Length: 198
Image (cartoon, rainbow, N blue to C red; front, side, top):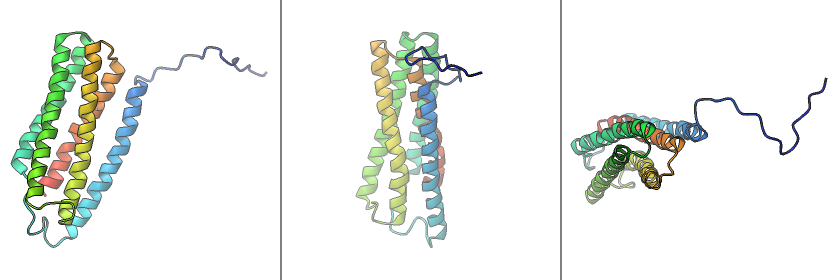
């Protein structure tokens, strides 16, 4: 017996719930591709550094290990804040606590990016550029790629704050931005250990 197809324009049958919104699913796909991209960069870095006679090469300034370690704590604090903010949002989207926690996450993320920018200016003034050595090239490529992701995530947080102020923020949107921020926070320790401490 032949089953009849629904007529054009007829209401569709409801999709089964997956537990993830389209926004979160899309963000997971994006994060998966970015993880592969970072894996390629790190693999190339490890191959080049393991075959070099001296790593870092002579004449290149040392990376700001201590300041970057403190800056890492700022980034980790922002990850904790967005976790708290999402819980507050789920409990009461219009609460002042939610607004403060999202705002603090944005502020901490901006401070992290700002401190990195200052350190980059110092490294450039000491002669470390993308063309000064493979060491400099890989540093700016790997850490710069992370910085671009951090800037993108800060802009997403800023938009989150705007939507929260307007009362139009949806949980799916918040969750997607939270996942992106977790990616920025979560990949940083790996990059810090490999690039700054190697």
